[in-house]
Length: 521
Image 1 (cartoon, rainbow, N blue to C red):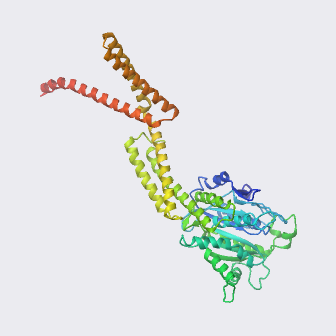
Image 2 (cartoon, helix red, strand yellow):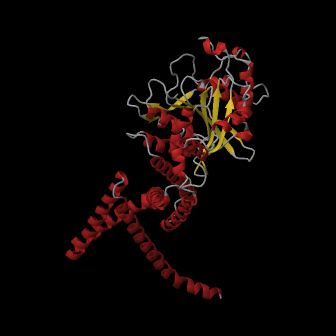
């Protein structure tokens, strides 16, 4: 377990005194945009529910399983030794809340699914709901945000599934009902109702089998039910692709009453440990891992960052968000993710032809490569399934096109910097023209021909002015287009003079080569 001791819960969403939530963007970016993480498909398991019900305590057993199964892999019992204290997410006994905001474990876990797909697994701990310091909006935000960002949400409840527990899920069912008008499938993936301290195993046995029967009973719709109760159950069923339930026994009196309890297995009831051995692999074994999807698209770790930002912007409004506004936030993040992927396609293709180690490329060829990369990037954007409709897609299409053109200007400037003639040849040619102008003016003055003097002065002054402008553009970076035009003029003059010199040399050599060939004949 030494590996887990070096990890910690990173608070990526922090509650403020004004009852809004702030994204710790740098910390989240450092975690999700790591080179070994960002391009992996992401699995997010979250635990949410009322405070002081053992969410963090439960997650630490999930951490033990992940560490043993995907890192240590020595075949030993993943639950660990009986006398080893439990480490991981912060937890403690008592009546006051311990966890605030949303936390992700700092150590991602990597594995390969049976399908061959490489995934990264994150565990999310959440602030408990319905404590004395949280508003209704705070509770709804924490629960909604964690549900929308996770592939598996564990709803941690105590003793039974009560009607008010189902009513609290209505916020998410409304979103699901609206979202189904725009996407194929259900808005959320898997919800597991975790019933802690279940005290009626004689009716429904501990574990998944008993939980399945209890859930079926609680979500049952019958004819004499009130329409409101029917509506709640229909909506919940319509929102989640998979609904399950698990019944956990009480961990033991010593766990609940001993203020010095530190998580040692020796002090936990045998029934609780038996159920842990069933529950944890049910969620985290390789064959049971569930990759996060939104609108049918699998998310990579880097995509998750967009959704954190988009959802938090909505939830930090003055009122609880309407389902439609949540849908709009999802569509925005979805389109931003498509823009990011398309931009990656463009940059990858351009780096191959004009990157740091590539030689100078002719401007016409560079323009051709830009159009090719741009077309492929736009195709990648169109190919990704997006929410929000054609108008929103057109807006982000315009944004993407503008960004690609800006990137092209950077690549063009980078390419011009490799042009040795542009760096040395242009100032040399302009200096030579200025010197030539002075010589012509001097000769004209000696001969007393004022027209020649004026011509020489025009050439010299014009060359010096152009040289001054060129130097300014190179040093300051301003008026870059002017500098490029001067480079083109210099290149035209150089090419013309070179051709004239070569043509004159060829004319001089032709007569002398003719007789020698005749003698050889």
